[in-house]
Length: 361
Image (cartoon, rainbow, N blue to C red; front, side):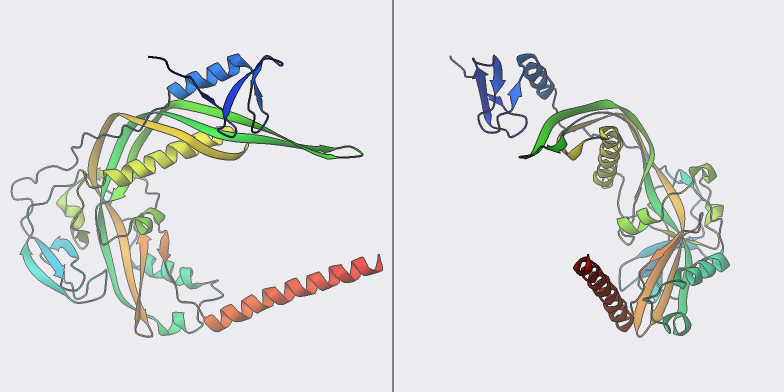
């Protein structure tokens, strides 16, 4: 059976052929010339392109010790379905997620026991002060918001996280260019050189966090990072005293896709650092393979603050270890229009002054 070998131009993907006059391979579409040895080397690199292999061996969480869950209770919100775990002495009147009343259900049982917990380092007072600081300097925030808004609910909650460890072997092929400009008395010239940038290496990841609760948006929880795992301790139920613990409803297996997404993005970003000096960088092929990997189950501390204003509820979250606070704020549309018109006016004045100066030159 006869086969035809067709070479593709790395620059424009057109079919290239050997040019007997220049004794090189040449693309008839973009006129790029290639040394045969260079193209053969590129062809060998293409053969190394692979696909991802991101399979995990999961073992996070453990069975509860006998009698350890006695005295633990579950509250359930009939509005958003949120479930939180606390000790039997805790009193809850509103859901920390949506602000609606919560209902006591009964004895906690069935879930896995966490491997680790990062205890709260900041108290309620610190959370309130962080919220006040968050209000300051926001020029588009309605002036009456911070004074009229009142704190409806403030809850310290341990949020469930799956922590993924992995060794990765990765190969990424980028396409990049270097552009040079020059001119003479007749013409302006532009020279564009195309490069195949091949990067590979081993990267180890430790404790890539993925929150295990559907009530907590991934981007919200990731915006509270980083947590310092140096403060983590082996889990004991005593750390839950006086706080709530969000009940995980996403298993470690269901969290794999998010963990893989974060790992792949981190690998690409790390390798991208080595492409300085090139422009138009984009990935042509990426292959990330997992080696030794595992997952653990941990609880991370979060303060949830619920503030109401004009019949609308605003939820803020604060890292209970570092004090980092995030949350959306209302915008004063009148102030925004004044700010926008102010910028437009400033730009108009600047343009007028420049045109006036050019007129007199």
